[in-house]
Image (tube, rainbow, N blue to C red; front, side, top):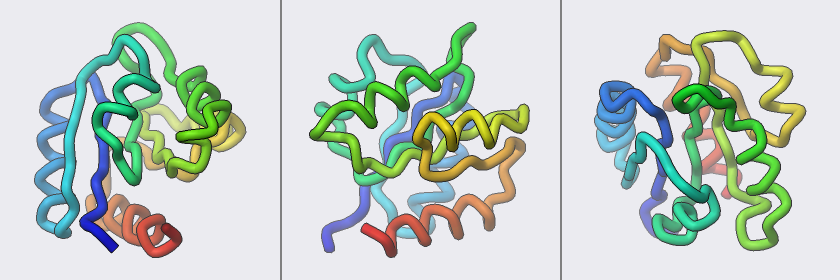
Amino acid sequence: METVKILIIDDDPTTCSLLETILQMENYQSASATSFDNILTLLDKERPHILILDFHLGMGETLKQVLLIRANPAWQHLPVVMTSGIDRRQDCLAAGATAFILKPFNWQEMTQTINHIRDQL
């Protein structure tokens, strides 16, 4: 399989940078964004194999974005790992997220989750 690309969307540039560093150490290709106008357009541009999406971007929640992804035939099977500093696991999984990781990250939990998802691709 080609190198797995992971797109990180989080409004905190430090979080994006930390995750990119961790993922690159695990031999993943990564890209990040701190905002977007249209999630589907961003996915079409970046073509990730896995998406890490923060629950809160700016003042809004991103659950609706997960629903858009799941409703789109091109992206409906994209693994989505949602993150938040507040335990919103049930809401995220109910919306269609593949996994949820609570902040602050345990880097081992993050890499184990991503590796498990990669092995399912």
